[in-house]
Amino acid sequence: CNTPSHKVRMSRYASTFMITFQPRWVFDGVMGKNAPNADKIKLEIRRRLHIFDSVSPSLDLGTYGDSDNREWKQYFLGEDNKQQGDCCPFHHHSSAQRPTVQQTGIVQLPIAIHRLLPPTGSVEVQVDTPFRTHTRHQHKTDETLHIVKGEINFQLDGESILCKAGDRLLLPANTPHASTAGEDGCLYVIATRLVLERNVQRREAEVAHV
Image 1: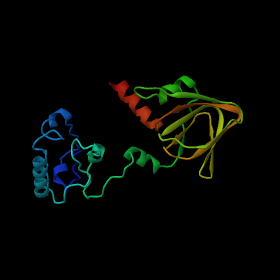
Image 2 (image 1 turned 90 degrees about the vertical axis):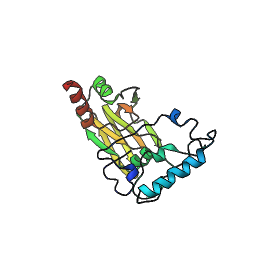
Image 3 (image 1 turned 135 degrees about the vertical axis):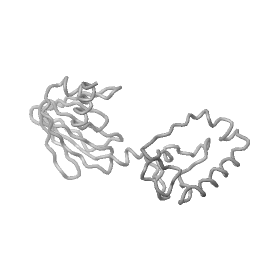
Image 4 (image 1 turned 30 degrees about the horizontal axis):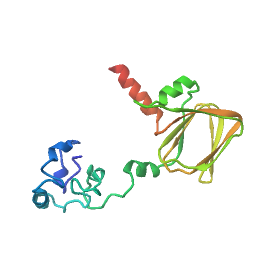
């Protein structure tokens, strides 16, 4: 990623936001374990970075072909040399978020399913009988739960959130939670990502415009 905000790491500067893709085959025979001049090339690249950038090369720059190299850490390099963590940055970002409830007014099952479906993939339709309880647990992925019928009470870090038909709970990954269905049970749709209704409406408007 190259951005206008990069001022000292000029090797990552561009006048507009830009993403550069380099297929792996372009490195075959040049970098990697079987490349005879790989070490010399790496040293020369680092030497030029020292000249071009006003900050030393990022500590997240790995060596192509190494088994312990994590390429995702190099997708976006900041201005400082603070190293990336070992967890997925998307999960790290979502774990810093708080569970929230949206009131959508959508109580028709086909519409709720359509709203939560990803471009490719599926959603889950869940039915809980009256007062059905799911004990405290957590998921490694984000979740969106859209209530279609009935009520369900979520317990989140000592906080109780009652969701009714038309409500949509955005549940970031690794959020401990438990739930109890209401006296009439609960019917809801689950998607394994965070789905904001305003983003769905914007996307549908763009498709309609095209």
